[in-house]
Amino acid sequence: MKRAVKKIIDGDTFIVNRRIGDTNRVRLAGVNALERGRPGGSEATSRLRGMIGGKTVTIVPQGKSYGRVVADVRHKRKLVNKMLR
Image 1 (cartoon, rainbow, N blue to C red):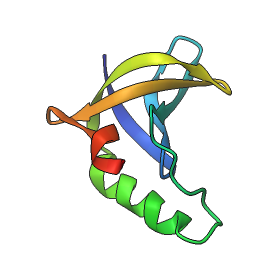
Image 2 (image 1 turned 90 degrees about the vertical axis):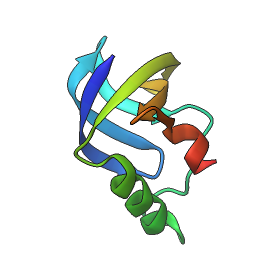
Image 3 (image 1 turned 45 degrees about the vertical axis):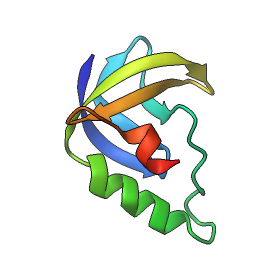
C-alpha cells in the first residue's frame, strides 16, 4: 500500500497521511535506530527524514508492536529497512 510520509518521529518510526488499520504510525521492521534525545539519535532521525520525509512510500506490514504497524518500507523500489541496517 502506498502512503505519504507526514512526519518522522525518530530513526525508525514515522507517521503516514492515512491510517493502516487502526494507526498511522509505522516502525521499520528489523531496524533499531537510536532514539531522539540520545547520543546519535538526532543523526538517525535526520537520516530517515532525508530518505523518506514528505515522500510517498510503499508499506508492506509485517506485524504490530506498541500500537504501530511494523513494516518493510520501500521508496523508489529500494528497501529503506535494508539501507538503514
